[in-house]
Image 1 (cartoon, rainbow, N blue to C red):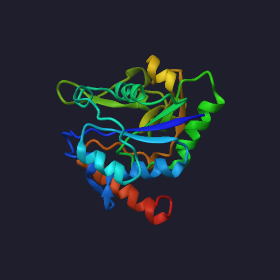
Image 2 (cartoon, one colour; image 1 turned 90 degrees about the horizontal axis):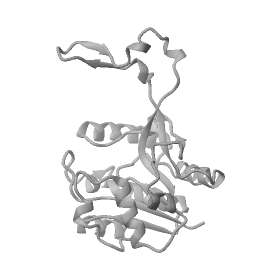
Image 3 (cartoon, one colour; image 1 turned 60 degrees about the vertical axis):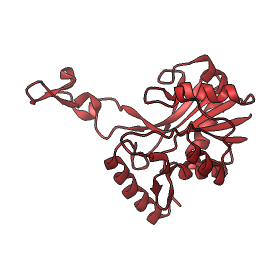
Image 4 (tube, rainbow, N blue to C red; image 1 turned 60 degrees about the horizontal axis):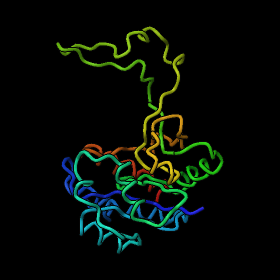
Amino acid sequence: MSCVAIIPARGGSKRIPRKNLKPFDGVPMIVRSIRTVLESKLFDQVIVSTDDEEIAEVALAHGAQVPFVRPAALADDFTGTAAVIVHALNQLPPFDYACCVYATAPLLHARYLRQGYELLEWHPDRSFAFSVSSFGFPVQRALTLDEQGALTSLYPEFRETRSQDLPDAFQDAGQFYWGRSEAWLRGDVLFSPASLPVILPRYLVQDIDTLEDWKRAEYLYAALKASGELQ
């Protein structure tokens, strides 16, 4: 089967300026994803989809390919990931599988990329396989604030239910999304029964949208590097 990795990396980032190029443990953040993808040896091509010349230069210098420039209309704050992947696939020769890998995934392991690939191989009736992790506490017992700033149950019907009696819930880990190319192009729904989970331990998951997220990712990375789990 032929496989392409597509790493979306636009130049604009409001909350963390130039996030994809910001140094993380000494190298631009996007380089972490490129290295892990190449290390996996799963892909016939590793593509970076970007509108930014500097990002393109860094990607090329570290072994990725940048065969096209992403249009400005697909590089704003409102464009979803699926549209970026569809655009990339339409610029490339046909591949059986396309894996979207986020540029801000410094805790990504190659072995989990392989798990996602194998899941799709084993389940030809499914469209996607992507990284998830469990919530640390049942979401059914979540709290919110009312208009007066007081605490209230988000799901009152579960207020008295013991946490151990509630089913596990999972969140998108924001690292990678394997999909059959035809499923991406067809517009199959990602968060649906068409998808299979690659379950990651919570200590390998950190979304990076704010400076606080970035700092926590640095702490996690340093601990994992010290333990030998990450290079």
